[in-house]
Amino acid sequence: MTGAGPNRCPTVADVLPAGATPLDPDEADGLIPDHVSTRAELNAWEQLNIGDAVAWLGRRTDVASLLTIEFVTELHRRMFSDTWRWAGRFRWTLKNIGVPPEAIVERTHDLLADTRYWMENGTYPADEIAVRFHHRLVSIHPFPNGNGRHGRLMTDALVREIGAPTLTWGSGSIDHQGGVRHTYIRALQTADAGDYAGLLAFVRS
Image 1: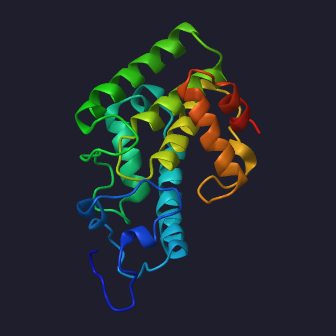
Image 2 (image 1 turned 60 degrees about the vertical axis):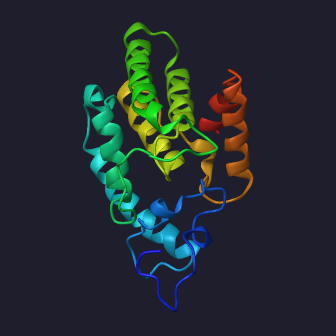
């Protein structure tokens, strides 16, 4: 672990949020801040970084640029550039969730193209476009870590461009263990089988 010292936790696994996708050793070595030794410290540090990304995102108004590979990776980079050296870089390792690394670019490109089509042709109501987009992006799992938070910010930006009301995402913290996170994960799992009702309800609860 980069910058490890006597006052540090021995592994990144010790400080990752509960339920986060495990990191391979080379991914774990990408941790930037030397002072992080607890999950609370990591969460706080990442939240500052994400706050900067949210401010940047608020200045973007062009949905055409939003639905591009470049925007997907740039948002992740801005969310985690002070935390992980690989921020904004697509995953290069195989996980127990997500598509194989070599399929990430193609699957992401297809999702963005499909989303443009849905919006241009009114294929689904606005909320359903949002949850279908979110579910597929999270299912691709394009980055080593931070996919849920990145996917929610991407979806928030998409909803804003569609002109729909802001999503509430269960009106609680999804990033920590608890009832809200459990409901969110269950809704994603149900969507895996093509049933989006739970996710549609969750994003407006």
